[in-house]
Length: 363
View 1 (cartoon, rainbow, N blue to C red):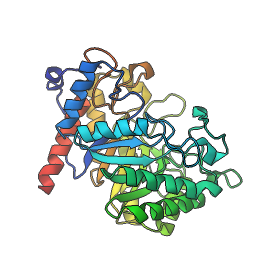
View 2: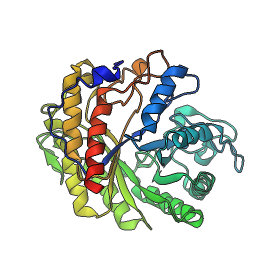
View 3: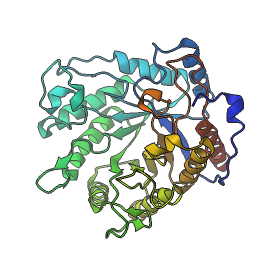
View 4: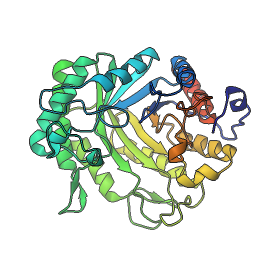
């Protein structure tokens, strides 16, 4: 979807924009990579430098960053230094996701990184080690303004009870929060980044349900436990997908209504806490949307953003189109690995209108 600015302006938004949140991005893999096309990378950086999109998020390991501590006490900051430098260069409001963990913290070997096990959680005996790594990151990069602790409860699963191991996650979160607070009082910290993508069929009993289906009570329980047991938090974060038929991948019951899961979760979460709500990842467009006309993709995306208008921050993933992965939907600029890349997509235009509306509200 190599859409240049002139073409972007021709997109007509058929959905009313009304919001009090900001749309940001999460960097992954080859976003703005130094080995990309120089002109394309420069265009994307210029786009970000305009601060239409202010919040930029990066993980400390994986998704474009290498292992930051391959052995206990031995640090390799090179790739994270590069990512932070790009965010500083583009005047970002910097968000860091404290995930994932070095192999030796999760039962692997020292000085080895098995990327197939990126989603494995640290062992309980290494929660403090991970917390100390988080504190090192906080101290090294004073530009960071927000921390999200972990990602989608990766690896935190209680096999015996067949549910999220939210007690373990909360134990680690509390250690991380405490460690960061020993070195930084000015940064905001949030969790638990619960994934709400495993929706159940319509009619399934759940406190959060609708014609689009039902939210898994297991995920709701994880959120409630963390809210009741964390030692401190500045915001609460989650992620979610529009409802789809697990067999066909088609939206349930239609593309617009399928996004009502976002407003249902937003409303439920507001009954549980007064903390600001962050959508760490949001996927209003299913994979089949890659074949939809661009105006339909934009309309559904815009409609979905309106469903979370009571949130504070919404981070889209990925930021940059990735044709190899057949993922252009919802991205903010086109592929910078090729010539003629780094141009804004129609979704950038949507983000610009939402963010402009938000800034007008709070100016």
